[in-house]
Image (cartoon, rainbow, N blue to C red):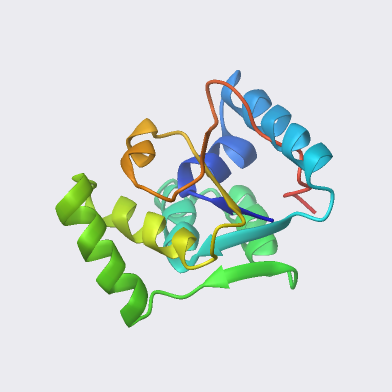
Length: 147
């Protein structure tokens, strides 16, 4: 099982205001209990989106937390290759997601059926085959995302 983080879920977890951060961490904990060997998956788009805010605000401390997290050797990266782009195009056309969201959904779907897509955006539920877990307002699991 792979927990794939949309940028919103990772941002809530790392720098989110309460009660969002607690909801995300709680949901992560619940997922980890059910799937003790769960891995953490990301796209390069998540990396980009998470780093923009701290860079804009010149918040070196939060940027370092993200950079340290993204440097972890145990992360499962999904690259934005031709297959992802083609699927994202299909998702955008047929499900009405914006381009970044379509890219995230397509990236996660590359992991196969054994995934949980963690996000704060309910629009992802429109994508067939995407196992969406809404976080930030409800639940998440305690995968040790911060070293």
